[in-house]
Amino acid sequence: MALLELNNLKVHYPIRGGFFQRVVDHVKAVDGVSIRIEPGTTYGLVGESGCGKTTTGRAIIGLNKITDGTVTFEGQDLTRMAHKNQHPLRRDIQMIFQDPYSSLNSRKRVMDIIAEPLRNFEKLSPEEERRRVQNLLDRVGLNPEAAFKYPHEFSGGQRQRIGIARALTLNPKLIIADEPVSALDVSVQAQVLNFMKEIQKEFNLTYLFISHDLGIVRHMCDEIGIMYRGRLVEQGNTDDIYENPQHIYTKRLITAIPNIDPAQRQESARTRQQIMVSYQQDLKELMDAEGKPLALKTISPSHQVALP
Ligand SMILES: Nc1ncnc2c1ncn2[C@@H]1O[C@H](COP(=O)(O)OP(=O)(O)OP(=O)(O)O)[C@@H](O)[C@H]1O
Image 1 (cartoon, helix red, strand yellow):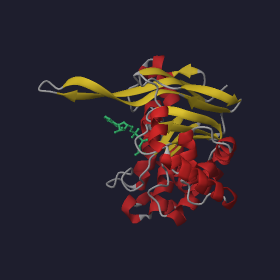
Image 2: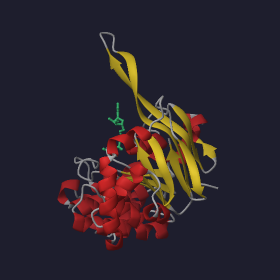
Image 3: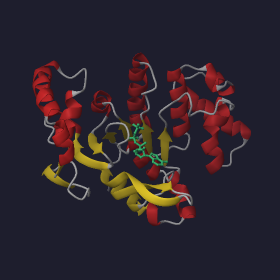
Image 4: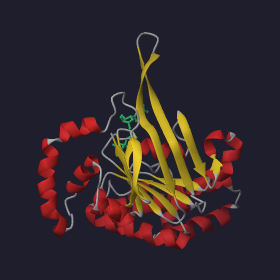
């Protein structure tokens, strides 16, 4: 059974206008996304800025209102469940945010930041709570004394480790990591990514890894889904997609990876030229005449591609 399944998920933001601020239109941020994530794996959600990746992640943890479709976690449909019944399941899904500089409350000590989810879900004595927090700090490679400091006293990489410790507090099954390293120096990115891989085994975690960086996604993910304007245009096994991208949009993204394997670089340069020439044409192909979601066609058991 999949740990997480999204079925035809839609999140449309209302656009209000006029004197009475009535809803005049909608931004179709997520428009019919279906994904299955198996336990213990990493699924990468990839696409350019504004394609709906963050909205998808936030909808899963209940931060965005779902317009249509379902979110099924361990076989239970969260979208049809009463709020109080969602509570125990919600602790199993945690999120790591993009920017470790703004996502940690600067007025709180690390102890309070990490303990916050514990306080929402468990009643622990102050002594037990301190032990749990310091144990977590140790697991993420920080000194136990870090508990008594404030976020500004740490580097970016250390702050992201604090964010990760916070996400691990409740022993979740799924972590949604939204661009977890994009705000960090390149030298620190690798450290944090490798650390995320290490703890995946140790804590038996499943990741939904959101990124616009295909180089990083290739390093991290077993499966990927390519998003474009709220829709998935291609999804499947990571190696299959990188080695044999089917959709023109995926090809374009892959040719833009700077550190692509030298063996593919020549081919990339050739296809990049062809692709850029017909780029405007290609973008039209992603939409049907009525702007409806494109069907995903299966080309192998693990690889699907949207065709106009
Ligand atoms: N609260 C909101 N109200 C209206 N529109 C929104 C809101 N949040 C996001 N959007 C729009 O929804 C679309 C998808 O945004 P989203 O943040 O999910 O994209 P993204 O792929 O995560 O981008 P990025 O990589 O830049 O974070 C964008 O067009 C964005 O402008």
